[in-house]
Length: 84
Image (cartoon, rainbow, N blue to C red; front, side, top):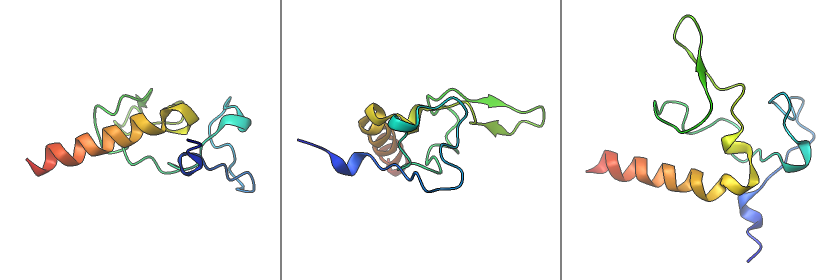
């Protein structure tokens, strides 16, 4: 199966790619605003600013083509946990 639905690259975006050092040929914009931002244990490579704000500028986890299924699983797990 091709799974074209799992990858979207918006090369015309004025911020593309929005993460420094990202491979533009393999940059998935589908999760442009990470739905896991408010999850404390999101699994991504984030840091905290001195003020305690989550800084995801170095995290490429949701933008890698191969991580689509992992993102969906994390979201489903989150919904399942909250509904219990």
